[in-house]
Length: 258
Image (cartoon, rainbow, N blue to C red; front, side, top):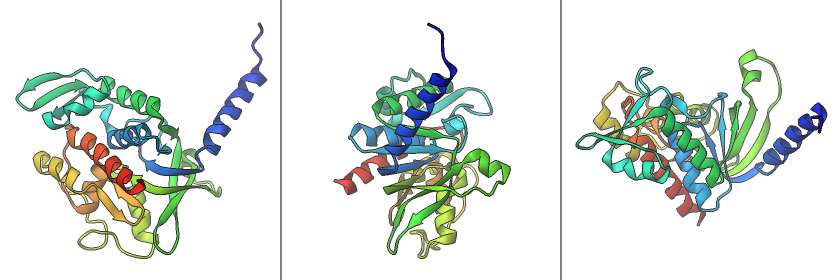
């Protein structure tokens, strides 16, 4: 059989169009494809919720790929090892409460596990704004990342969701938009973004979970985004808190959806 370039093109367009159309309205929209966003997507999809993740970069996985300073190993504390087990990630005990895992295997396993559970991932898409009504967020305003990078004036499109998770890490991309443009205040001490502090791994890992919450009606925060929003420190290449934050935010939203 001779391969036909037009059929190949048609197949891509048809399949992508179906995928996009099926996610114009969803239960949960996740912004940011790092570990907390992927884990949240996994648990939400596994519960049968319609959930999609939007990542501005070509690759999904956030900062986990590089381990620590491009030494492609990560550290996970014992309290989060059960999540590695769920995704079939191999790990080794380094010393009491410190486990190591290959960052490439871990990241690729999170991506594969989440998509197989039912999470839809759209890469190269930037969230440039949110949709709002009088009392809450109702969705996202999207554009192609290359459009943003090129500075082109191209109007975006919108998708609706009952809840949004900002898991964009240090950047707090959705929270910044809400703080700047949406009437009302964030559920932080100042009502605004408190700002990320310098590294303190032990404190940061505790606060990552504590700060994972609904920070504005319809908007949840997870992972490093939660710490940056509430003024917590960064934690570096230990990822247990990120994984646990994804699990927690999914469980909190599932309760609300139920």
